[in-house]
Amino acid sequence: MKKLNLSDVEETKEFRRPEAGAYICTITNAVDHPKEEYLEIEYDIAIGEFRGYYNDMRERGFDWAGKYRRYYTEKSKPFFKRFCSAVSRSNGNYVFDAGEVNHDERTLLDKSIGLLFQEEKYTGNDGNEKTRLIVNREFEIGKIDKQKVPPLKDSTTPKPRPVSSSIGSDLFVSEGTDEELPFK
Image (cartoon, rainbow, N blue to C red; front, side, top):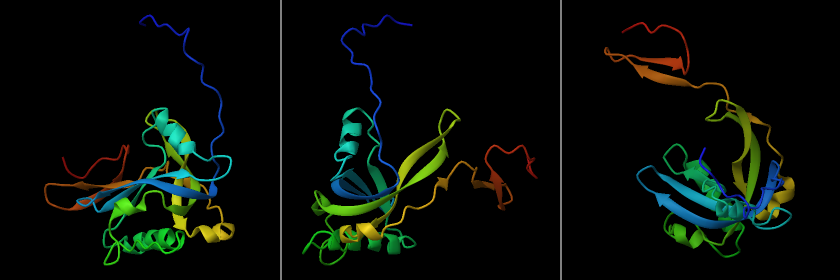
């Protein structure tokens, strides 16, 4: 190992993280990805014990913290409309409809929105099971008391993935399977 000087380095401290539940948040950035048809939304918790939590995480180098994607593909338009309605209703006379009135994602900056978080169990890159908070859905901030914490989402089970053969048929094989494929 290379020689390090840790005499001026402050040791990391334990810190609490938010729990699954409803939070009033502020949109801190929004970037459109038109080719992939999604809006990347960066947020932070706006009030309470965890105010500024995700900004602090990003300042410590966790660039992924406090971000999620809201797709606007044809199939996902109802979910995107829920996002638009939640942010519009949470901010008085502001309208974001992704259409004729306002489709400029830059106007989302500093807008309030309710976000419902749920815990997700997943397999980390190191192969260990871990948990993290993910955005389950958006809501109007005036309805924070009506939100119910969603159950744990278990994403540790391998998902089927399509495997194409030279004859064009698609098979679904779980990742990491030892089953033989019917072709070579």
